[in-house]
Length: 129
Image (cartoon, rainbow, N blue to C red):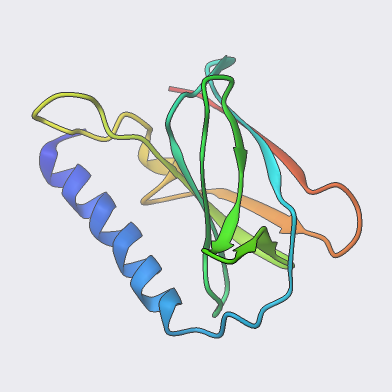
């Protein structure tokens, strides 16, 4: 991915987040967690965004095991109940800062997650490079 593609990817992510800030934070949220793998191995320090239609996004970051938990606001954990578009992104170390995850998982994401009101909302994403 080129620096131009990376800039576009981050612009899309930031636009989504800014637009979602204006949306109500009174949405019903429930705990959401899971793992992100890349080619079967834990993806460390990746950002994962769950974006419901017309509502504020929830964000998480993976740890060294690829595990994440979503945060809705500084005072509210979880993700919004319903169908969410999922975007996963990770910036490469170094001055280039290129995106290391294929576009189909962020800018052109094909990932979704249906967050349910009751039950375990564990979502595992095994990405392919």
